[in-house]
Length: 501
Image (tube, rainbow, N blue to C red; front, side):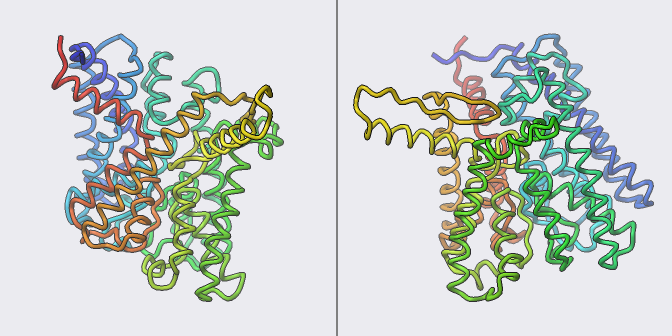
């Protein structure tokens, strides 16, 4: 028998959702102030209106649903899943008011793509979008990469028990420090330090390339936020191809890899334990899969002979591979080139890379390297059981910060998430095929959306069918939260409708 949720459950969810929305309100104040400083008055007004709407809903929820109780696991998961929906709906308001999106749905698509660090875009005439709105697009990626809940944990949520349940609900099941609030603040510390270094480096590259200093540093901070948070938005419509800069491409590749690394691993590297970088199952799995997927891609591109020189192959082939594998979505070629210049094997290599992703507790989406490593270790264990005598005791270990004995529950969890991702990749591809797009193109775009990558072969556009837009929005949302929070919300809604007292 399914039990109907109590009013107290709704109040707890509403109260903490309101706190998260208040955190989003503070984030919106940044582009508002920026617009005033740069004298972009109309864009600043767009954010003032959005800020007021967010503040209204945040205060209403915290007042009407006030409670001193900490959320349990169910509450935490539901708050997380609803927070991303609320952030999308509210974050889309200033974008829609700019006039650069054809509809509010397109603005919601953009906001979800930003917060989920995907990078697929439906913006119109990006090259003439205001600095203020462009900053917000990239700021959504910076917030989403760290996690919307991380904002709330840093400023608005005090209970440690409830905080951890919300932290886990955002697909982060590893605490870096014993205190989850301190963990959230450490994630921000890492991000801010890299933000300063990355912006300065990219800004200098822009100046040396001939850009005006203020413009160079604006582009630098935007590119950093999207590269480190493995997003994929860029200030110009040509993406990274616009800059035609090898130094910028190299720096963005480094930032993409840094963003794809577990924040817990960042902590140990900062603490001086650099050997962990070589021993960790995630980093070894990451570099092995990069090698394997690039071999597939390179063989495919060699068959076409479009990049005959190794240097060009690096900038056009390897860059796209790293961008896809880290879940970033930066491109140094036009979307249509994937279709008209690359062959199917080259596309397959990129699809495999996008589907796998980076590390857990990082800014990336997709299946992730820890799960790939665990599944491979479990396969080795089963092979050993078959080969060795029946009396032999088979024990499999892996190194992830410390030596860990492989257990069935770890394998089951890894397989469940992996199968869920594979299912949603194929499901999105079927929707694309329903609207007449070829299978491989549809699978490419679907994998890019569900794995929060942002590479596009040209399907994503303002002219694509409305149902396909909704499909990609749901894929970006579910893929970023790794399904458990989404399943919990669906269960809660079913229990509310069909549950018994």
